[in-house]
Length: 282
Image (cartoon, rainbow, N blue to C red; front, side, top):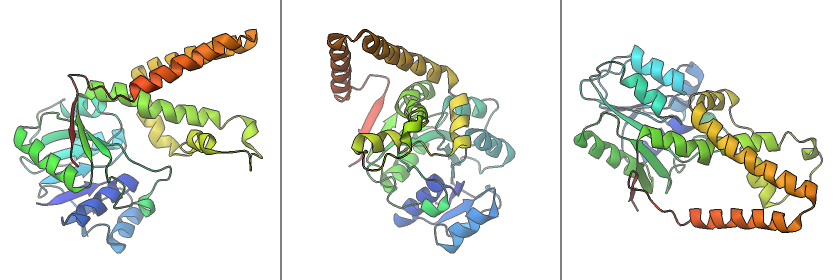
């Protein structure tokens, strides 16, 4: 099986390493030469790709707009599997469906990452036991079988299959909103001079504040409606706490905290709805 990964950032590089660890030969492509040369020199890839007509599987680890350009500007093998790993899915799926394609499209989103970026931070263990979200797109059963095998071979512990719409709504809450909160939290001037005053809660809140601003801005805009809804919900909850504090109503504050604790406890029960299919791989 001929495999190429387009995009030599931390996710693309880690996919290459995970696939190579599983015994696959992997070629790479990148818009800039530096990351591609680094990937080859450090044996993250086995070779570089100039075109894509000969590859059976092409993973696209690029930001949304760049991923769509890549799909539209290149030629792929008839029947190839083309899978993007962007953090939004409806935007990519709609672009793929704008015209007939000769390939099998699958939307993917690995639920793994770091607060740093770049090929230098790629890691073969990044996806071990993590979840991979899969949107079938136009893919036939045989293509999905191949994709599921590759996902398992990369070390993922779970596959979650859903529609692009469900993915984007869930990710607005579980990922994008969390990054916005972290970024807003660190803008309080009190962050200066906190040495000795921080514990696990501070680290958890601030860890993802320093991510790539251009990539995340692109994701936010392409999932704006879902994200605005989640922001409205959060702002309403924060305003309730502020009002309770202004009134000095300890009982009300305790009730607010109790409601949050119950939501957290119920959420951890991981109830799966009929429109989401979950498969544990390990």
